[in-house]
Length: 446
Image (cartoon, rainbow, N blue to C red; front, side):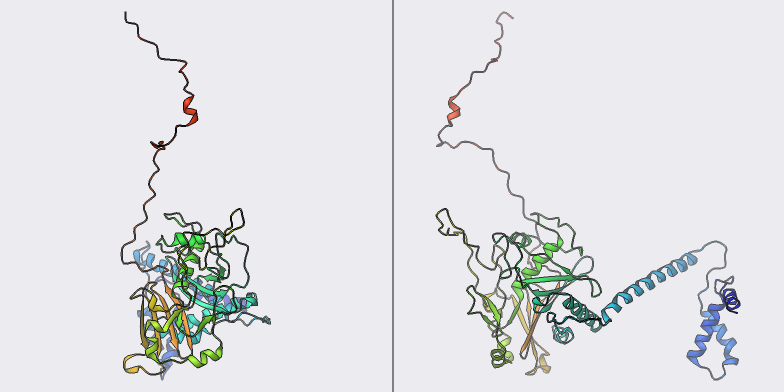
């Protein structure tokens, strides 16, 4: 019986001269009847069949392949490719919604991105509700796979590239890797945080490498759009010491240490630390200090940098002490001036920040948010609301420049060595050697 049914179906699915099978035609007619539900379907069947047939695009009946035939075949091919991509995307997204069989006893805290997204939207940043939820599930999955010593994760933002985007998550580094303190800092400096990158909510997260001083210094001299490939080489002058993942890490550090700001009072100096260290104020202090009037948050004096800033050497802290042969510390004559921790934004360049309330104008109220937007790093935003604040970056990872970018000129060639006039002659110069083969004198008779 089943074989006869299959044989009948194959017969109905044969294409007629006009390229449309009876099976497809009857399917469309029945679908139209079910949708429109006419009062007398039997009498309307022939009329509906004629309407469906007239509205169906029919390939040319000519024997040779025409442009229309090629277009239809190409359209069908593209449709198959699109369906395959849709199925692949749905399959990968389905993994995010799968409840894990075992949940770790302890995982790093992760952000409630659906709640923070409401604040981001008032600042003009939105990934869409569905995409934000997928990102939230992806960050949650990342947290479940990490060492709980990372304490907490933060959705840092997104950097646009020439081929896709980099979604970035930040976590507090909990242990110092092996490193040369003369070349890079540990978790008390520029490597205070660890970063993970993903091209989409459904792709895996990749941990970025630690940062060196040289990478920060060289990155300040470059202006490049990222390619979207973490392993891509960085073609530049001056040469950058690393791949795109190292350049991305350097740009993230520059943005973080320059634009992570918050209303004054959320952070304080750690008095128990031997070196200057910024920490989050306790809950009681924050409860007493906030919420604040909007007027205090719409000025630069109401905000401060809560991350240690990078100096010209690419460090947050002074260089390690160097001892001479006698064990005495050597003074660093070229040491850069230390940047004061928790300095307010009124110490930044004029026009570096803009402020507005959201909602503002006629909708402004005591519960309005205040949005601080960086003009130095376009895309960096801080939002304060009640007893909360959040930072996020969405941009190209490029610093604002009022002029067109010009690559630095190569260093001038060194001159040939020449002795100075006052220099004493070398001892070897006294050993004047006689040429054993002097030129022959010409004969006068010739």
